[in-house]
Image 1 (cartoon, rainbow, N blue to C red):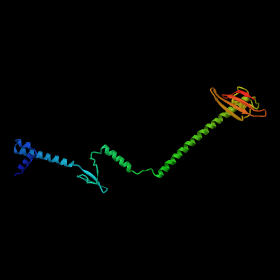
Image 2 (image 1 turned 180 degrees about the vertical axis):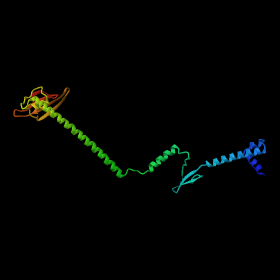
Image 3 (image 1 turned 45 degrees about the horizontal axis):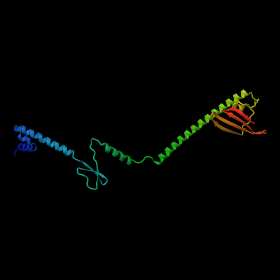
Image 4 (image 1 turned 90 degrees about the horizontal axis):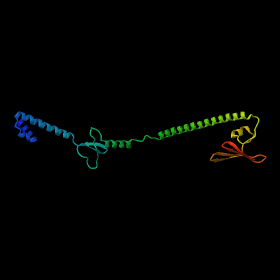
Length: 217
């Protein structure tokens, strides 16, 4: 049998319809060759896309065109086009579990040291601000006392009277420091009671909102 007859028969087996097409011998031969070539090409592509299995055996990855044997864990083979979202998520979880913790004892100690330094710096800044506020308040009180002394006209002392404010009483009168002070909060403000003792007995001075409102002997 001639090779051309063999190819024609082969072509007709692959494409039965070709048997009913009346064509010249040369044209029929070319047509059958094209059809057979296309068939072989499709077969080759199908073979190239066959399933590939990746199995883990004895701790090693083994690739095969057959399913994994019993007792061997299969591993999904991802196409070259890229990993699926599920596979990427699984790999991220696996890497997260396998990466060793970097938080060593030295790093923890260094972090604690930095935190302590920051805390001490905050406390130092707060103490400095409190001290600065106290210093400003002391300077303010000294200026107010000097003004009161100029108003009093010291060394002359005056007797305490109703209507004097507390600072004037302290700076310009001969009233001694109270032995105790009782504070009362009222709807209209605060009331202070000075209790002072002496040779003539106890004396009580009442201040309403910082102003002398009553004197009791």
